[in-house]
Length: 326
Image (tube, rainbow, N blue to C red; front, side):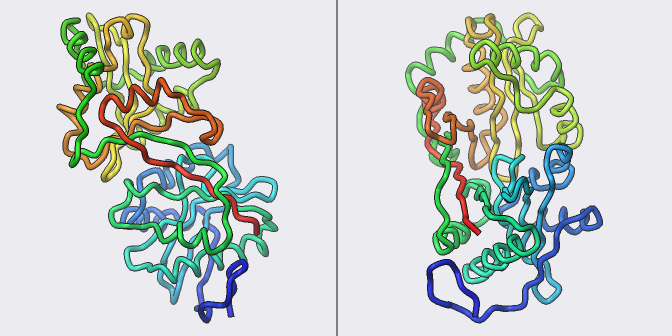
């Protein structure tokens, strides 16, 4: 019999094989990511491995009867498995026909394997938010409950559902109208160098930090995923004064690295840019996700930042992390 933590036996264990990922599995891994029900391009190896020097990869592949059923993007550090420490989210990536009971088994098999093969003592798990999935895929949330996982972080993001749009607030409409009078232009561009100068200056002055990605890393990723990673800029007299990076997945346009120069702020360039993106570029996607407005694992809320995003009709989506004691 197989046991989950503190519950009675519930099934006879099927035979499931666990294989630790290596470069020889790249093609099979990427093919599965491309067809899975809850995957995005962030799980492709060309994305995951760009910072391979920072992490000891411990990604797992789960087979039943020779058929690949699930992937687990993961790394390990000092006895702690994270799925995945270098990604915004990254729990089990599942085939369409994987069902609830099988996900329970995936957790049990993974936990046993991590303890026996990696001598791991903890597992940090970040589910894929439902807005990124092709079909409902929250079987892992139920399994987390069954194995006694504890919620350790919850970050609040803000997303717009294009099928049920909430109107812009009056303040945002006024700022968009102001930007419309400033002779600004908006477009897709590839001048990452100019934008990183703006972004780095804003982060340094406002938060005393740097972008998570270096300029070289961002340019590398954009070159690897030109259909998924885009830079949009706002321009005044040909000068970039504001911008944002957009990660395009199947159902979500995820806006991140949002910044404006002092000139851009005075002109309301970000409001104009977001209005342009909603009207001209991303009006057909299911969701436009503005990213999180929290810090310290969700314990601190940047209310001003949240207020701005909610002004565009965005509402709450959580990005969670759970801790499992092995």
